[in-house]
Each structure stands twice: as C-alpha cells, then as structure tokens.
Length: 518
Image (cartoon, rainbow, N blue to C red):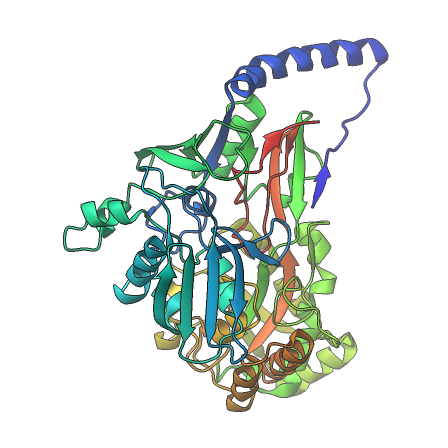
C-alpha cells in the first residue's frame, strides 16, 4: 500500500508563507472540529440496497456491513491471507471434509446476547437454507454442529479447499444475533427487518439508516477486539463524483473512495493525498460466439491492436498493471504470462486479406474508465483497418447477453471475483454453468482441468492447472484479459491505515483500522 502526496508549483517565498498560513488555518477550521469529535465522513456513490449480510450483493456499502457484522475468518488487510476473526483457530481433517473452528471467548452481540457456537449455527443455517441471495457460499456444507459453546464443526459434501476463502470473502457468511433473528422473524426469516437494521458483533453499530440520504455507524465501546480510532462514521449518498470532489476540497467529507478521475490524480489540490493498493479489479473483454473473432487470424490481428501495453498508461497512469492471465495478478502469478502479438504489419495484412471487419463493443456501465479504454482500443483497431464502435449497455444487460438476439461482439467488463481462490474466478466466469459466463460459451477440456484443480491443496500444483485452463480459455477466444487496476482512495492528508483489501470492492475503507496520524 502506498500513499502519494503531490506537490504544487512553488510560489515566491513571501506568498508561499502566506499561502501556507492560510491553508493551515483553513484546514484547522474544516478538519480540526471533526477530528476532535472523532468523526469520519465518507460518501457513497450508490445507495445501500440492503444491510442484510446474507441477502444482498452490496459493493459500495461492504465496509459498513463488514464493520457491523463479523464472520469466523477474514482476509488480512493488504493481502489475500486468511486469518481468524470470530474463530481464533481451526483444523481441517485429513480427508478435507471436516472443518473444526474454535471460537473467541467473551464476545457479545450489540444487543447484549452472548456470542457462542449456537449463534454461528443459527446464522449459517439461515444463509444456507432460506433461499437467500448469498446461500451459494455454504452450499457444500452438509452438516453443522456445535459440540460445545466454543466449537463449531462444518462437514462438507465433498472436499473444497476454497472453503476458507469463501468464508473470508467480503460477502462471506456473517454471524447475526440469534435474539434479533427470533424477535424479528415475521415468517420471512427477519429479511424485512434486516434490510434496514443490524445486530452483529463488529467494532461498529448501525445507529441511523435513512435510505438515500444518510447512514451513521457508532463505535461499539464494548467491542471484544481493538477499539476503532473513530467514534462515529457518517455516510452520505452523493452519486455525482464531481460533487464528492468539491465536498472533499471544501473539507465537508474526508475521502473520495472510488471513481476519482485518473487524469486528475497527478495534480491534486494541496491538502489531499492518495492511498493506493493492489486490487482484484481486472478489466476483461468477453467474446461472443459467431463473430468475426472466431477466425484465428482475425482474432490475432485484433489482439495485436488491443494490446493493453499500448494504452494502459494513457488510461490509468501509474495505477494499473498489465493482466498476466485470466486471473487477477494478486490471486495468481503465472509462470508463463499471456502474451499479445506485436506485429502490426502482419495484423494489417490479415485484416486486408479477410475483408471488412466491423466490431461492436458493449460497455458494462457508464463508468468513465470503460469509455476511456474503449476509445483507446477503437483508435488502435482503426490503425489495422478494423472499424469498431462502442455503446453503454442498459443496467443489468451484461448479465443477460446469452439470451440477447443482438449482443455486442465483445463485452468490456470488470471480472472481479468474490474470493481469492482461483476457483472463484474460473467457476464464476469461464466454466459451463458459471453464473457470469456472459455469453454461455463452453470449453469442456478446460472445465475438466478447473474441476481437477479445485480438489488440490498444494498451491503450486493447483495454480499450474488453473493457469493451464486459463490459457486455454484465452487461446479459444473466450476472454481477453487486459489490465488490473489498483484500489485508489483520495483523501484528506493525514488519514492513515485505510485497511484496503485486494478482494474487497474498491474504496471499501476499513473503519476499524483507519485513523488520523502523521
């Protein structure tokens, strides 16, 4: 994780001193009162759909939900290492079917209910058995039991080396107060109540929920772990990024967590700085079947033109790296990275030989980064004789492309997984029944390798198989990996220890670790 503070042009000595004095006074007036009160002010671009940790695939609000609720394990900040949270230790049986978790002592829910193994079982059964959106994370857990108050035993239907990653995921199963679940079960397993209320064990409590306007988290002074620096987190809903930037510059908020324009990152106003960290935010192109790209020569020519090495700096400056495989770089460092062809003369000749090639690129959303990438690739494609256009897909349309009678030739999207195990990438985006296999394409021989890899516990051996399958998906023209973009948060100078995690959606500051400091 790196922090950048960019200098401004140096004025004359006298005006410089006066400017610094005025800046210091301004910062004291705008920041000091809030700092003294222990308040952190964060904007969200998108409103919270639900605060139910089992029944919504929230992205922007994950930092709030995961600071109110806790699971058995989590990813360590800045890494993909799984560490204990409500479970202090665990063992895995030799056959890989039984996971025994030993729980932390002395934990209480926000309503005063004692935390114990029975509470874990009740929450996990709710997620798995009640038809909730995130039930898939426990689908392979066939039995749950609590031999005593501090031990939970999960028995799987088949070995699943990715289980700990699923439990550590930002969307992994959390533990909800069993008292709250019982009291607010109106025949719906408390789904309605939990949309706007919360009772967890986390370092913060949900104190205010004003849909579309404002959310407030209050520090849990009875928290079992290290106490957070801030006593209160004030969350506002500000969809317009330009408004967020103006509010940050005026000292009305403390950070712009996501979508700060990359072109502006090298010329920030004084008083602002950047925290950036590696992230699992890979931009990929998914290719529909029965397009001009089915021709290997045409596809090779197109690969030559869209090679991200030609445009990554223009699109993202220093805040992105070339994707090495179809998996995020943080997840898997391949022995033989994917390579793009570079012979432009050969590419031009291939297109001239084939005849007119017209391509349509569908953009997953109107996020400016999509448009910027598309514009750069379109210009490169034109240089080899390919005419390409791009348009923004309607909201949600990317998920129904396999049923679209007239889909784009390519889909430009962020193919980020929900956990750090390669299975969560391959099984979601590439295999036959993957829920985000956008065009429904199938490569059985690669899928078989993915299935074999998913049973292995040796990381080196496992990754070799995933890499092999990934190369096959690429060679078959199913997916083209482009760039992995860093998590970038622009914030007031002095904000430290943001706790960014590679697997989390971008901008999800950990409210339990963040602080003001030198």
